Structure formats: C-alpha cells, structure tokens
Length: 474
Ligand code: SAH
Ligand code: SF4
Ligand code: F3S
Image (cartoon, rainbow, N blue to C red):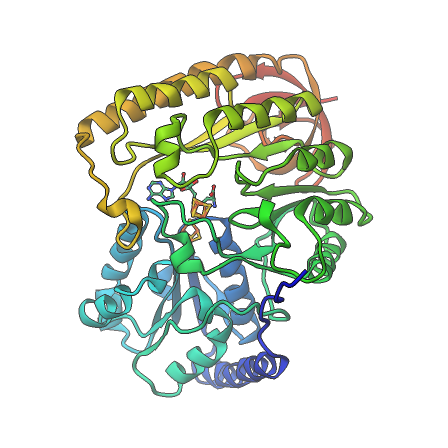
C-alpha cells in the first residue's frame, strides 16, 4: 500500500512552543509580582466537540503559562474566542461577542482579545477583522493552534496585532491539555474532512483528513482512564474513514477493537459516522466490544435521493435504511440519532416529505435539525434556491413535531426498565437531584442514597417524560 503518513509537527518545533510556554510563564510571574494576582484568562467555545477539544488544548497551554481561569470576560487579561463557521448563526454570535468587547478594550487597552478556530480560517475573515474589529489583538486559524504560546508571547512583548492563519494541518502531539471536570472526555482520533458535502464549510476550514497514529490514541486513552474518566468520545468528522491515510493499515473497526482491550471500567463512544463509509463490519465490532456504547449518531441530512445527490453525500435513503436495519438486528438496544438539514436549495415539498417519512419509519432517539445556511465558498451557495424562508421554517416546525411524536413511545418503553447510568451532575428537581446518562446517551434524572457524580449506578426508570427519564437507584 502506498500511503503517505500524515505530517507531524517536528519535535524541534514542539520543543520551541514548550520554550515559549516557559517564556510566557516568566511574564506571568512578573505580572503577579506587580499586580498581586496571576493574570487571568477567559475562553469561550462556539461550535462542535472538535472545537471544545481544541479549547481544552488552549486552556492547557494557558495553565502552563501561569494563567488563572475565570468565568467572566470583564475580569480577564486574555480573552479567547474559539469560533465556528458551520452556519451563519454561529458566526454572528461570535462577531456579536467580539463587537460588544469594544468598550472593555477602551477601558483596559492592555488586555488581549483573541479570535481563533474555524471562522477565522476562512479567506475573507482576517481582512474583515483587521478592518472592522480593531479590538482584536490575536487571530489564529485551526492550523496554527499549536503555535498559540509563540503568538501570545509576541503579543505580550509589544506587537499590537498578531495574525496567523498559515499551516496545512500538521498533527501536533505532546502539548498540554486541561479537560473539563466530570466523567466525560473527548479524544480526537483524526482531524479534517475529505467529503466536501456541497453545503459544508468544514473541509475548507479544517483541511484534509489526517489520522492520529493508533499508538498515540491508545496512549491518550490509557491516560484518560488512569485519570478516572469514564465516558470517552472518539472524535472525527468522519470516523469511518479513520486510518485510510496511515501506513500501518488499520481501519476504524480495528481501532475500536484495540481500544476496547484497554483495561478499566469505562465506555467508548464515537462521532461522527458517515453513512457512505459506515460498514457492517463496524456494527459487528460495536456489538462484540463490551466497552463500546450501543449508541450511533449517523447523520442522513435528507430522505430524498435527489437532494442527497446534490449534497454530494454518496448514499441513498434505501442504503441508509439498510444500515440501520443491520445495526438494530445486531444491537436491538441501540439508540440512534441523526443530523438533518431542512431547506437545502431546491428542496421541494415532496423531497421534504421523504425526510419526514424516514424520521417516522426509523424512530430516532434524538435528532439535531438545522435550517440550511448558505456558506460562501461552498458549491451549494450558487445553487438556485426558490423556497421562501417562511416555508422552510414551517417544514422545520413540522419535522420537530414529527420527531416528538416518535420519541414519546420510545421514552415510554423505558418505563420500569433497569439500566446502568453514569451520574454526571446535579438536576433542578429536588425529588431527583442527580443527572445521569444511559449507555445510549439518554438523559436521566435520578435519586438514591449512594449516587455520586462520576460513578456508574444501576437505576430503575419510574417516570418517563418526553425529554427525561426519572429513575431511582436499585
Ligand atoms: N462531519 C459531521 C458533522 C459536521 S457539521 C457529519 O458529516 O455528519 C454538523 C452538522 O451541521 C451536519 O451534519 C449538518 O447537518 C449541519 N450543517 C453543516 N453545514 C450546514 C449548513 N450550511 N447549513 C445548515 N446545516 C449545516
Ligand atoms: Fe461537512 Fe460532509 Fe465533512 Fe460532515 S462529512 S464535515 S457534513 S463535508
Ligand atoms: Fe465544528 Fe463549527 Fe468547525 S461545527 S469543525 S467548529 S465549523
């Protein structure tokens, strides 16, 4: 097999960043001496789990550089906004936040306002920020994330504005990370996407698919398990094509098997799967691996073959149904979720009807539904789109209603069932003071004398509702 291994950031460049971490840490010590407290950092994440995982890397670097994490932007010395570009709404929110910081910057001109992530990686954004958002001091794209210590150092030592959207997505191993508290953790297994669905900006802002080496992934999983994490989600835009770019000849199913052999009491999940690459082998592997949660997020986007074709998705609705039927035959208890786009250019009432039918026939436990949002630079941005926005919104509402009707009997079927859950927080209901998730990812509110956050528990469902299963420890 003639595949070229994904390019790694050379060790000397990683060392260089570790050196910059030291240099910024020295500046932080000076700051603390002058001000009586450590410098403070605020981070905010827009977008998907990939971005959350990236923010954890930035937070880890900030920790090592001597920053104290704060929850309010007004008190921070460094403010970092990790942005998303998948829909216009995500960009508007990020830009709205940045815009509102103009007065804070006026009051405290020494603070550093940073913008990073997917939105920034689009060609037109750096110029727009340069011209219209003078309060932004630091701007770096998804491919420059690992150079954050160096960029921050340059800013802190006198450069007014440091902009860097260069790079092609080399994989950087060995940088620090600070994960969110709780029993759950993200574990990136690959970056980027090769699929170029015609509506989607992700391949343009995240680059081509690059898989991490299986040994690096397994090493990180072992660390997570040793730290006590109990529910670990493997992340990639299309995990089913994991390994295609690796010389070691391993596919996603084989990776799952390998990770399933790691000792410890934990659950593995993964997202996102793509119907064109999800295989029967994957479902066989899921069924056979005791640590792999029986949960599948398999976005179908549209139930109409004509729309799927124009979306460049590479499968038909019939193929999707076949996959689900096979997965359910192998794992009858599996929970299913999907992403759907309503109002793709040219979507007719008939096309939409096929989406509704698929939702009703399959019966998903969860749906993530989106109104189509035009992204400049994607092929679909130039497709004729004559459906009025009002009509799209009406379809959207009909879809939500259909989904609720499907979920209700599914939730009711849990009544009286005994399940293992992972307790993960406190609820607002004093009668059921803890929140938890089932292996399939469903929300549970529960009560019981020995429940504790971060632990597994066995509970009996005593009151299912549309959005939550209420349960008591057995
Ligand atoms: N890689 C994943 C998810 C990527 S983005 C996958 O292929 O499934 C998450 C979801 O956002 C997509 O599944 C899609 O439903 C939605 N999405 C992406 N681009 C969009 C756009 N331009 N308008 C509306 N929704 C979009
Ligand atoms: Fe976007 Fe399609 Fe890639 Fe998912 S598979 S990230 S929807 S291009
Ligand atoms: Fe995720 Fe948004 Fe980027 S969905 S990959 S953060 S464009």
